[in-house]
Image 1 (cartoon, chains in turn brown, blue):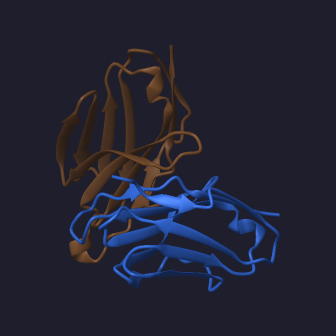
Image 2 (spheres, helix red, strand yellow):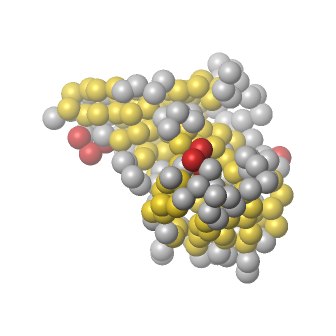
Length: 114
Length: 114
């Protein structure tokens, strides 16, 4: 079983819809949670970064972390065709614990239909 | 400022040949990471540098893989005697300093071993 599980999709939604993307994880040492967006043939681009449990909002994007359930989510409001990409969750134990490396989900491929 | 850059962007090689992949991190970033992204495997950690030293090499898949970093800046990932299963996108990321958990990725080098 992988440390981080993510539904690979593909996920297709109409423009303007709310998108919900999720990951579950098994390693309780994870403290830092990130969402990256990756367009085809490009490197991952950092979207959201959250420490420990809680919510964080940035424009149309909201990240949620529930450490008790080992479950993280990314919500995209008013989705746009330009949001079509692969979304990767990533997490780490943090450099203060000597655990800097990121562990990634496999990514969810999202398509926003105009 | 400039982001993480990688070269070459694409590399085609024959089985058994050696290849060198280069990463230029964001100026001033002390931490540098190499990851590999392959179909069905997602993004996998290879090695982490803090300055010129590599405290975590746990992700290197075999002794054919090695990496070095000089001057606390440029890093080179070397794959000796390449195999077809080495075909993947090799991604480099950097972060500002220990305690800064966000990693910024380059565009990757697409390696194809024939």
